Length: 185
Figure 1: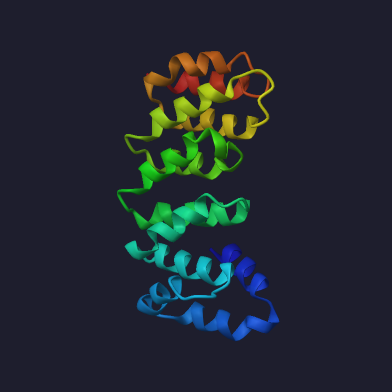
Figure 2 (figure 1 turned 135 degrees about the vertical axis):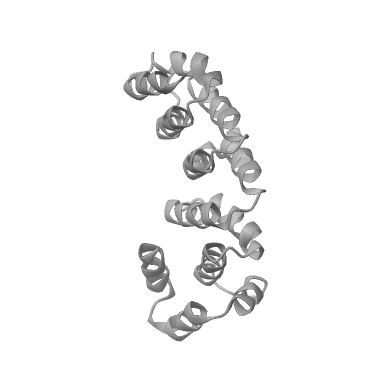
C-alpha cells in the first residue's frame, strides 16, 4: 500500500501536493464524488478508487477494473490489490474477460494473478484458456503464460492437466509446469 501511495504522491508532484493530501484524507463519499469529477488527473482518480477499494466500497469497482486494464503495470498491480480486497462478486468475471482477451494479452499479467488470488469458479477455466492460446511457438507473452502455469498450480484444478502437460514442452515454462502438475489431485 505504501508503495502505491508514494508512486501517486510522486505523480501528483509539488504543484498538486495539497490536492493529494485532501484525497488522502477524504471520506468515502468525497472519494466517490471525485471519481466522476470532470478534469481530475489519472493519479487522483487512481488514489480515490484505490482507497475506496481497500475500504470495501463497491463504488470503486468500475474505476478499478479500468485501471486493471491499464497499460502501466504499477497501475494494474494496484488495481488488482484493491479489487482483491474489495470482494465484489463481479471481479472474477471482469478479470477473466481481461485475461482471455487476445487483443489485450500484453496487459493480462495482473488479471491472471488476480484470478489466482480470487480462486473463483471462473479462475481455472480462464487461466486454461489463456495459457492454451499462449502455447503457440514463439509467443512473446511468456510472462503471462508463466503466471497462468503458476496460477493453475496454485488452484490445483485437474481440468488443467492437459494444458500443463503441453506447457512442459516450452523451455521457459517447463519447470513451473512440472511443479504445477505435481499439485494436481
